[in-house]
Length: 273
Image (tube, rainbow, N blue to C red; front, top):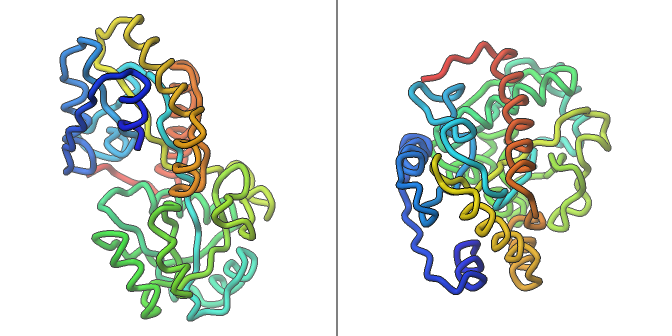
């Protein structure tokens, strides 16, 4: 959607070159190594960061920030097989039944399991067993069978389970409630501080790209983000308004997210693989 809207604003064709694999490291490495011509850019976040992957790619030091393309807050949900409809109820149940709550993460990245460790710390302790799944669709199946008890997932991967009635959203980890889940509280509303957690997708340029090119693409991206039609599509799909940011604000946003990841890494003694 972003490429389509940016193409319209610039009146230029944009080619999207998907480079999946290695937890996004393949795409990030290709983006960092691209020619700094002002026509090559990378869209991605911190999934491939060296703190999470050996030989990873630090987009913040190896590339130049342009803008934040998308921010997708995480949703914390429980299976409807258990009568847990709030964080307080979940914490009480987890403490009374240590080792009996299965937490599911997906996609091979440790990000979600690390954020769950941080959420547990912020909430005063939620004993759980981490069960990694290959992808988000397998987690949705697990909610239905009751094998998955709790999950922290993006607002894009959770709706199927919510619509089927297999999962109950108990926390929307953004700064404000989502229009997609208006009855689900934010962390601040339930007394959990400093836990506004989202998956950030930034637009980055290879180092050496001129300031003029970065400024032009930043202005075009922000114009796209303000377009009513594009805004409504993004809100409908992700539950969040497309952000409007400067390159400096983009870097600051990612630094804030990295600080949360670093704290979670310390808490869990995580070692990159």
